[in-house]
Length: 371
Ligand SMILES: Cc1cc2nc3c(=O)[nH]c(=O)nc-3n(C[C@H](O)[C@H](O)[C@H](O)COP(=O)(O)OP(=O)(O)OC[C@H]3O[C@@H](n4cnc5c(N)ncnc54)[C@H](O)[C@@H]3O)c2cc1C
Image (cartoon, rainbow, N blue to C red; front, side, top):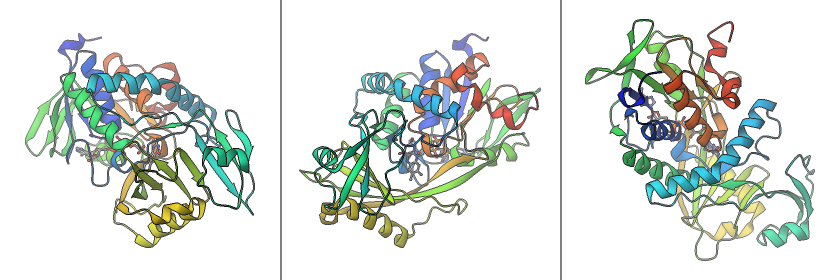
């Protein structure tokens, strides 16, 4: 392994994956430059800025394959430490809260299977937790261990923590392709020319496979899956105090007073335009579950592109090309998985190996026959 202090590493992508990995690499003593084609943290269409911020290792993972469930539970367990360390290093809030999540069930709807860490409760118990739920509530699945974080505060905190760890930022610098060097990658080509690096971490979200193709490198396919959301101003006494899943939507009250309602899931390429009829439907679903939401002023409607791999699992580590690490493919769970994605990608960049819990997600499964 190289001396970390002498390693020059480029990270491509200013979302949660790139920022988290850059932070860990900076802390380990590497000389890190983080590139994004836009501002940092990434906005306009980037998934992180448009995210709900749910950290749901139970409700979100009901039908997930066993390795992803295990990864999610480990990530959930890492969150308190990650959020605490981040808040200290960045000297700012992340909006991380542990208040559990209710999956509300109304008259005419079946109860979902409870599952591990999820308890079925009756309407009285559910209303004791969330008095604002609609009168025809039948009960709920109650997942006490779920949490959430404000994804925008998280991204801003990661920027501050990266700065404190010595990471250099290159906003407004689109990486056109990765530069070859020997049997691997030796830098990045931007509109300012070739910049040499010892290693490149590709955390370019839904754009990751485009960049691999532009660089004539093998790699898994990723497709953008658009999600649209809206936010409401919660006011002095918000009608929800914890994460609520309801038919057709989820509702997330954030520490900054915004209540997010999401989200659509659409395969429309890289288009990030808003479909107001679809967002109106989300709002209708939310009001059906928590009627007082109808009274709250709307703040913003927005969309982002989730990075989805062909098998729906994360893409971490190498693709059989030297000096290249992928940190992508987190699809609907990039915030939940953030602490482990950052650690795994940083470890791969520094030591050329993934931690055991991340090995099922090696990106090489798509490119190296024996992987
Ligand atoms: C509506 C919505 C709701 C979601 N809710 C949740 C949730 O509640 N919980 C959860 O865990 N996950 C959620 N997700 C998923 C999560 O947000 C993503 O998995 C995660 O944010 C992906 O982060 P990322 O850093 O990989 O990508 P992004 O945040 O998209 O960042 C990638 C960045 O790479 C940059 N880039 C791309 N190409 C280049 C290039 N060539 N040169 C330079 N820069 C480049 C882009 O500009 C972009 O800024 C949600 C996603 C959406 C869209």
